[in-house]
Image (cartoon, rainbow, N blue to C red; front, side, top):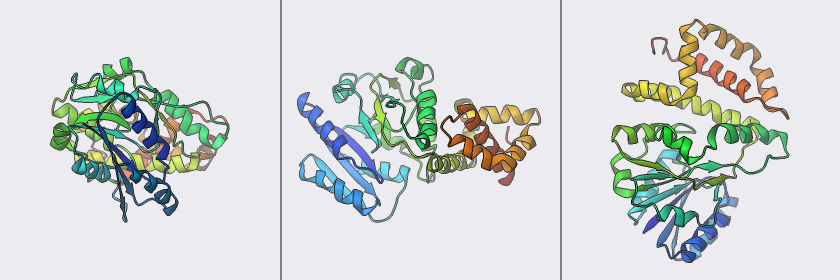
Length: 306
C-alpha cells in the first residue's frame, strides 16, 4: 500500500484528494491518504475536513504550527503503507496516470522523484517573480535531474520506502521555510540511498505574491546559513549543491563581500520594487539573494567559512 502524505497549511486540498482517490480506483492501486493540517486558518480547516468522509482518508488538525519538517515526520509516523508519497498541499498531478507512473517503477529505487511544473504565465504582475523562478530554476525534466540526483531532490513530490525514510527523516532543527529538502537530499547521499528521477510532475499551484515570496526567500536564506552551523561536516556538499552558496563563496574570494553588503543595504528598496514589477529579472533576484547572504555571513560571524 502507498501512504499519500499531505501536509496542509492554508490551502484547499479537496480537489487534490479527489483526484488521487479517483486515480487509485481507476488503476486499482491500494492507497491511504493522510492529510494533516498544520494550524491553518479556520476557513481551510472547514473546507478540508470534508474529505474525512472517505474511509481511505485520515484527516487530522494540529492546534499549533509544527513546521515543514515536523509535520512530514508526523505523517510518516501514522502511515501504514510500505511506501510514502509526499505531496505539498499546493500541488496537483499533471498527468491522469500520475499514481500509476509511480507504481510502475516502485521497485527500481528507494526514492523516486516526480518533478515540478508550472502553469501558464499569470496575468497579475505580483505573481510573475515566483512563476518565473519556478519555470526557469525548478521545473526540470527527469534527465537533467538524474545527472545530479541528490542535489535535484525536492520534497514537494516524491515517493520513498517507509523503512528508508525512518532511517533518515526530516531534520526537525530546521524550522520555517526553506532548505529542509536540501538537508534531506544530503542525508540520502550520505546513506547512499538510490534515487530515480522520473517524468511525473505535479503542477505547483500555490504561487505567492511577490512581497510574500521575498519574505519566504529571506527565511530560506536564514535557514541556509543555519545549516552551515548545524551540519558543518557537510559544508562542502552544501556548496556543491547550492548555486547561491557556491557563487557567494567565489565572489567573496575575490573581495566582493563588502560591495554585496553595500548594494543590499543601499538599493534594497529599489531592488524589491523592480522584482515586484511587471518584468522581474531572475538575475536581479540572484543579486538580491547574494546581498542578503553576504549580510548574514557578517552577522553570524561565518567569515572563516570556505
